[in-house]
Amino acid sequence: MADETVPLNRYLALPKVELHRHLEGSLRLSTMLDIARKHGVTVPVSMLNLSGLVQVQDKDPMTFSNFLDKFKTLRLFYRSPDVIHRVTREAVEDAAKDNVHYLELRFTPVALSRAEGFPLHDVMDWVITSAQDAAKTFGIKVGLIASVNRHESPELAEQVAWLAVDHQKRGLFGLDLAGNEAEFKSNPFHDIFKEAKQSGLHLTIHAGEWGPAENVRDAIENLGAERIGHGVRVLEDEAVVALAKERGVVFEVCPTSNFQSGVVTTMEEHPLPQMIAHGLKVTVNTDDPSVSRITLSNEFQIAHEKLNVPMDALKQSILLAAESSFLADAEKAELLQSLKKQMNLR
Ligand code: ADE
Ligand code: ZN
Image 1 (tube, helix red, strand yellow):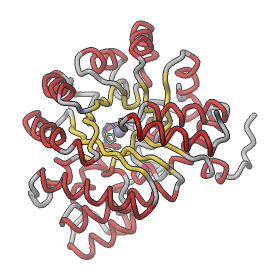
Image 2 (image 1 turned 60 degrees about the vertical axis):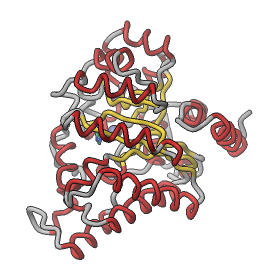
Image 3 (image 1 turned 180 degrees about the horizontal axis):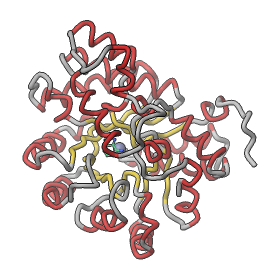
Image 4 (image 1 turned 30 degrees about the vertical axis):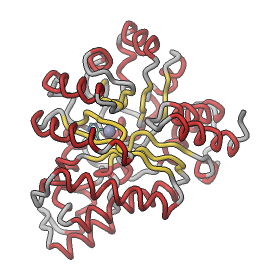
């Protein structure tokens, strides 16, 4: 059995790669309080309750709708270019402090633009500029992914996709489909994602999280996904497992998020070890560190101590994350070499 007293530092010490982290799920609570004071953000109940509105609580129902509701409140905070600059910078800083060496940070331009009606291209420019500045300041490498939600307008998603294509040279490498998978199909987005891929963007799709394994097949075959966000329900269908293996699709698994949004009823029954045993390509990620009140080091601790994934397998998953990042080949090779050196691997 794993030793419960092993300090978190062991996980902090691991040089990590994060492929699946949402900017909107990464806001510090202290920053939200500050923004609320400065911008007079009125939240439905008292400020003392802010955590309950934007972060999952132990007493909350562990459901996808409760989880997604946190993002509705979070949208009230994006009140100025400075706010967007600050939250982006802090998200990068927090990853660096957690010893993340490469962060692929995804952001939802539609969410960030809503409160004040900012143009989508401005929002994209602010996030990219702030993220790349912060990367230099905090000594971490950052790539960006633009996210669109299944439950929102395909017309806006198309605008985001085209803007993303135009920003590839500035480190915006990919497009992601997120949002309410339980109630919304991906069909309205098929053509948008196909064209985005043809224009050079990498694709990752949230699928097999709140929807069945069939959605993982849909993400691979109809949307052209190279990576799957979550995808833990793939194990419900052997044929889809075989398809994912044949195509070399990589899974961005986020254990605590899955528990908090009701994908699994206890942490101990999370299927991460079974996914590895089936020979699937699995990486460990946070999803929304602030909403879930976690760090990536926490998730590695859970994977090792609660799910009994050996440390060697976790180190290999870090290398796999680097290999399946959306970085250009030369940068990827450099990252891999540096990670191997720091983990004493060859
Ligand atoms: N947006 C933020 N977190 C998400 C998740 N876990 N699934 C779908 N959309 C999301
Ligand atoms: Zn996600």
